[in-house]
Every structure is written in structure tokens, then in C-alpha cells.
Image 1: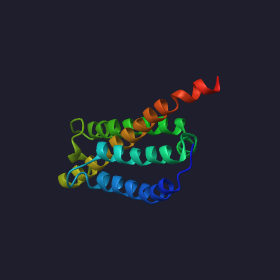
Image 2 (image 1 turned 30 degrees about the vertical axis):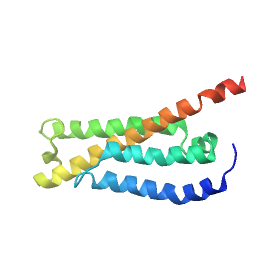
Image 3 (image 1 turned 180 degrees about the vertical axis):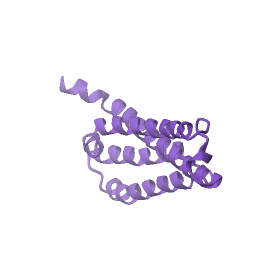
Length: 143
């Protein structure tokens, strides 16, 4: 891969800002527009930018494929677990009001946890797809 100094410097500045914006969208999602899906895509785009600038092998060392699979599963379990938890405590599936002593507190906690599960899952699945497509030609070159 050809080293482009300008891209490397600009991406070192932008990637933390992109991740920070993704976290803002994630944790501000229950108060305004945004949430888990949007935040997951934004965070994944930062890692994809890193992979495009520094190379696929370097990006895969930062977040290995087995960690991405675990995170994707964890996000789904977190989402579904909140629903099962509400069932155990006498509510309907994903009826957040039973999660805290007040209805409003339960709503905030439930939405936060569900959106976090969605964000983790979307981000890791987007990266799994990127690594699968970007690494496709690499296997043919080694044979």
C-alpha cells in the first residue's frame, strides 16, 4: 500500500472525532434524533477509514474477527436480555417501566440499554462485512 502522508495525518485527527460523534449520537439518542443504529454505523465508519488509510491487516489487528463476532452476539443478547428482564419483572416484552422505581427512569434505562445493544451489533456487523469484502482478494493472492 502506498503511504500518503496527508491522508495519514488527517485521518489521525478525524478518527477520534468520528468515534466521539458516534458516542454522542449513541448516548443522546433517547433525547433527540439518533440512536444505536446511526451510532453503530458512525463508529464502524471510523474503523473502516482507518483500514482504508493504514491497511486492512493493521485494522484487523485492532479489532480481530473473533472479537467482532463476540460483540455482535453480545449486542443481540443485551437487546433481548432487556426484554426478558422486563418479562421476569412482570411487564410485557420491552416494557421499560418495570426496570426502575419510576416509569420515566425505567424508560431512560431501557432505551439506553436497548440502543447500546443495537449500536454494538450494528457496528460489529458492519465491520465484519467490511473485512469480508475487503479481504476477499487477499486470499486469492496468497494461493
